[in-house]
Length: 261
Image (cartoon, rainbow, N blue to C red; front, top):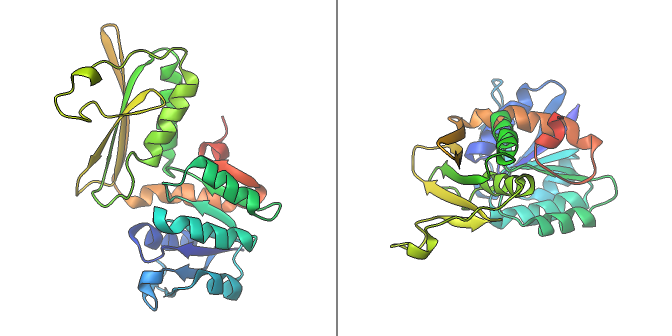
């Protein structure tokens, strides 16, 4: 039985994680942590409830989890990781916003054999979208990314868009010009340039998580799009990571590391 501690347990993603872990074979929610919801009862999806506590360090001492799942906020995740990793707890992280160098340093300070697993997107379809985009970028280097999220998302561009841009930059054989910036009538109209890939971020109520990778070529376009229309789309990936993280060590980035070729 894998004992799992969920941070941000009272949030939209945290509540879904609690239900998904409870429903998964061989896993159990050992503790639910959310400083802003101390004492609140969280539905576990199996006709039961688990009470939120505020202090992460105390929860780790009391529940002895093997894995911490973090879907919190960029302002909180670093502290959470320092606390959990120092205790030798493997971490599965969906909170984006920390630079890779910072993640690498956190993983490096952890006891030997401890894993910090970070994925910008836990939806299986999103990982496939990135994989297909990498293949397309080898033959169609002209590309822009449009990512759309709900208006409460804390970072822009999204972690998924940044990850996609990085993978495209590694894959394509040339970097074509991205014209139009020199004639922008409004600053930022052409989007942000990340590793020579243009990214446009949309934030609107009613959305969950969406991304389109748009390629252009002579007389043709190619669009690769993924839409998460419900937060449950991320849960199979979270459960997969919780089940596998104990076999890994150090910093591991991306759900694709668990999906094979």
